[in-house]
Amino acid sequence: MLAVEGLDVAYGRAQALFGVDLQVPAGSLVCVMGRNGVGKTTLLKAIMGVLRPRAGRVVFDGEDITRARPHERVRSGLGYVPQGHETFPQLTVWENLQVALEAVPRAAGADGAGAQRAGAGAVDEALDLFPALRGLLRRRAGFLSGGQQQQLAIARALVARPRMLLLDEPTEGIQPSIIVEIEESIHRLHTEVGLAILLVEQYLDLALKLADEFVILDAGAVVRAGTRDDLREESVHRLLAV
Image (cartoon, rainbow, N blue to C red; front, side, top):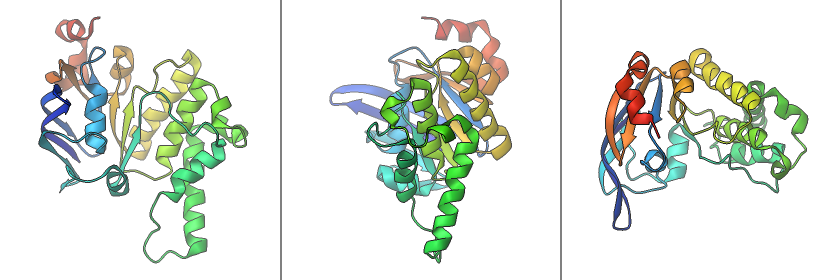
């Protein structure tokens, strides 16, 4: 479904990614791992079009999207939850979800009522994953806890009903009880909904629970890739050790 081929990305003269290759088959969950500062977030930003590569290409569902703008990639079916549980803090939970909904193009032939029903259904589906948000719909996002903001950020991405979801360290800085909820939600999206997921995650235990396959980055390059069973090898542990 997603293919990253020979991707080079730089910040000015400082190159951050070197010839990165990555495959995410339809319906699979691939975990991108590595120490801090090795290029994991840069990789997701390049896939979403936030950063332009120097070389290489990004192919999604058979279409070369290397030069597509971020909103065009969203419309093609990519959903993105950046690092840091980003929300619109002055807007309520409900308004955050509605902003995402309004950015989704209306299906061809759908009238006003039909589009409204479809939108309401998408919001309900997203809230079903995070039922605690239903009681917080009128609360401003800036007054939510970090874990609640992360749940909202994921729900907001799901409102567009993406065919693939990119998650950048969704458990970072989150209290343990919410980590469990987020982990369960990712598992449901993968196993029950069949959503393809590219997950940036540092915690080996979480990757062992969720991932079908993994890649490890070091100094901007892929240094190891394999299946979940390979994550138990000592050589992998050494690559992830701080």
